[in-house]
Image (cartoon, rainbow, N blue to C red; front, top):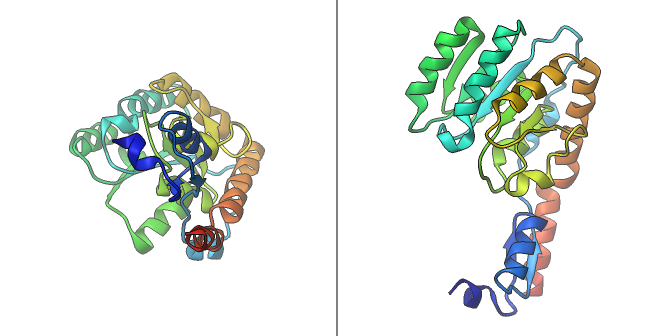
Length: 232
């Protein structure tokens, strides 16, 4: 059924080159086209991120609060960082089935160094991005998360796994940090690496923002989409 649906002259839109490769080689799609997500850059363009050697590492998790987002590995990673004496803040935003459990856990672990924002949108989401400098998403699987692109547009340094289309966006030590799936040790090491090297944090932040502004902006998305429709 899938192979039949993907065959023919009609364009098949994929979020990344990796997805395009799968539908082409595995399912025989003959007209797969890469069209990544785009994000509204209006608020990010207005934000002027300041960089200071003494900036507190402020880690943001924004997404559905489920175990497949890696929460069971975020907790011991933050526990390790606290034990080793790293001063940081953790912000969790979103909603999901393990929300209450992990809100309690993080509060007990971090106290006033933890903030739970719940579901955020509009100005509240913009403020969350502006308050943070690291975006943490160690998911087991993903497509191309809008939250990742939004965070990078504000200059947050992404710390993610290389699943789904995220591996086409986050390049290790160029515009973010890649960690192994299901590895709290990797998460802790990535955050320590960024916290201990302000110049690197700044470089990765600038590169992350630049990538989204140039490759994932609405203008480029609309131009590509129009070409697809014109082909039809």
